[in-house]
Every structure is written in structure tokens, then in C-alpha cells.
Length: 309
Image (cartoon, rainbow, N blue to C red; front, side, top):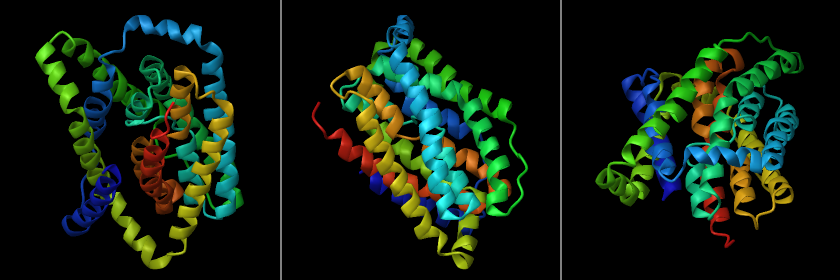
């Protein structure tokens, strides 16, 4: 069902943007994602759960090592083979944005520890500044390889601050309020499967309906070969990180399963938002691997989540 919604949202979003000039980006979409996809998963999370950071510090360090060193190296190698600066940048951006709006859904579905899962999600969002700095470093040092120029076009500090506020702080505060309003909390929990599906469709429709996303039509007209190249690159990236995560994490442990999901899923929605601000620097092809990550990651996660732990 999620895959159908992804395709439908993307197609309708592109069609809307093509016929009606597209949306102008608003940060409200990030708040919408935080309230509908992250906030409902926080009802069982307690402030006392912060102690898990110290109890599982080795797992934390292992996750940071994998997500912010190994995966970027893998993405860099695959990206260089594509021969396209934009595709390489999009893949690299995926590699430094761990987790995502649906990661808590997969963590819960696989009976992993949701408290640790949220802490990992929080830490990954805190590290958005690091992720964007790594993207900047990638652009600076890889541009000569692709025989192009690079200039930073995004305010790292302000963007990271906005992400943390809209996707973590506001949803968490609101969840603390709602847990004391039993009827509202029970309604949200009961309707969560429908809320997450509707939210997924709205977010994808909106992002693919942005004015910048319409440049994909021009890219298809002049450089069609970049589309299959991007698909192959994204498939290779996901297969490699899956087998890497299976080796690194002990899936018998609910805590390690939470870290496992934070590694094999990427924050695709956030990556798409960042890429729409960065296409003047990296090129419109930067959106391609992120777009294909949507249609690869969701069925990929559905299949893995069916594994009985």
C-alpha cells in the first residue's frame, strides 16, 4: 500500500506542478511530517529513557561509525562511478541522513526498542549540521573530479535548527501534552495506520509538486541516460548497506534492531527538501537518486520487516 501511495503521490505531484506552476516550498511541510509521522510514536517514550544513551554507549558509537563514516565512503565510491556530479551528491546526501519519518514505524513493527529508536532518531537530527557540512565537504573536494565548479548555497546552521525544532522539539512537547488527554491519545493510536499513509501521500505529493521538481522533465528530455544510472546506483547502495548492517548488528537484540533500522533506512523526505535548495549547486540530477530511493526503500523495508525476530 505504501508503495502505491509513493507512486501515486509522485506522479500526481509532478502532474500538478507541470500544469499549475508548482508549489513554493514552505517549512510547514516539515512540521506536518513531525506531527503526523513522528509525534504518535512518542507516546511511550519517557524522559528517563535518556539513560539508554549511557547503557548502550557502545551501540551508539557503533551506529555513528557506520552512519557517518562507512556509509558516506560507500556512497562516495558508487557516486564516482556514476560520472555525474548531481547523482553522486544525491547519493552522498542519502548516506549522511540516517533514519527518517517512517523509521519509528519499522522499529515498532519489528519489535525493536522504540525508546532507543527515538533517541537514535533525535541524535541523527541533531547531527543534521554535521550531515550538511559533510555534503559541503563532498562538493568542495569532488567537484574537480566531475570537471565542474562548486559553491555552497544553503545556510547550514539555520536549516539544521529548523529541522530540530519542527521534527523533534515540537512533536515531543505536543506528545507530552496529548498523553494526558486519553481520548485524543487513543484516537491517534487507533487511527495511526491511516494517518501515516495519508501523511506519506501528502508529503510526497507536495515535494514532487514543488517548482524545482519540474526541472526533472527537462532533464529527461536532454539526459535520459541519467535515470537508469541513478536507479542502479541507488539499488547498489541499499543492497550494500543492508548486508553491512546484518554483519554489524545483532538482530536478536531489540536494541540492536533499533540501530539496524536507523542504518538501513535513510531520511529520504529530508534529503528531498535539502536537494530542492541545492540543485543550483549540484544540478537537477541530484533529485534523481532521492526520488528513486522512495520507490526502493519502502518495499525494501516492507520485505525486511516481515522477518520474524
